[in-house]
Amino acid sequence: SLSPRDGLGPYWTRQNKMPFVPESVLKKRRAQAAIAADKDAASKKAAAAAKAKKDVIFKRAEKYAAEYKQQENDAIRLRREAKKANSIYVPPEAKLAFVIRIRGIIGMSPKVKKILQLLRLRQLHSGVFVKLNGSTIKMLRLVEPYIAYGTPNLKTVRELVYKRGYGKVNKQRVPIDNNAVVEQVLGKYDIVCVEDVIHELYTTGPHFKEVANFLWPCKLSSPTGGFKMKLLHYNEGGDAGDRGEKIHELVKKMI
Image (cartoon, rainbow, N blue to C red; front, side, top):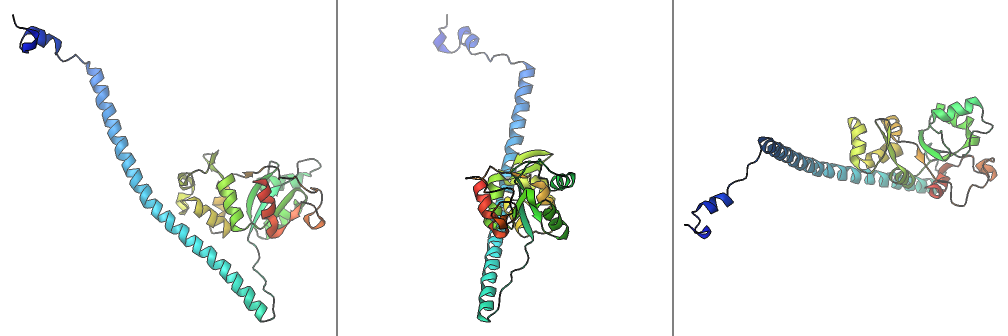
């Protein structure tokens, strides 16, 4: 008889016969392989698109940085020219305000409550960006005892968006942790990254309304060291009302 080592006997055939695999298992394997191939192709395509988009975003960020620097230099130049001519430089009126609610609903009239709802300031220590015009300034004046507001600088806008920025996606509060969140909602307005959002807010661009509506009201913390006196106006040594460019000091304590 043949030994198992000869490789020709029945023992060898019996031991190395291909195992039977059901057709359903083979079908499932083929389907999984097709899905994996599609997924791999989609990921490669997405990576290529992301690389191209990254270059566009980087160029936009560079352009915005140059624009901000130019604005700063222009302000310095105009101030120096005015001083040289024994005149006074009057900067243009602010177009943007950041509004923070600092008081609750005790003793609040229905009109004030409605205005705060329109401003989306439904919670204590919530903050929103507002475009300043005749109507919004009148609204802010009416609710001044309940809010603190002022003109934010570029650093303040950037910190609020990056640190406390949440977007409204399908009526859900979603953290802005990547550019895809922005592009998903604002891509139709050619706003595809966080720097676009910051630029649109800071310059109060043509799509300011859409961007401000996309941003969920910032939920800030109670300020470090507390408030001085909520019931008094800022000009009287309190916290309420317009504080101009010094709003960044309050925001810094509350981020």
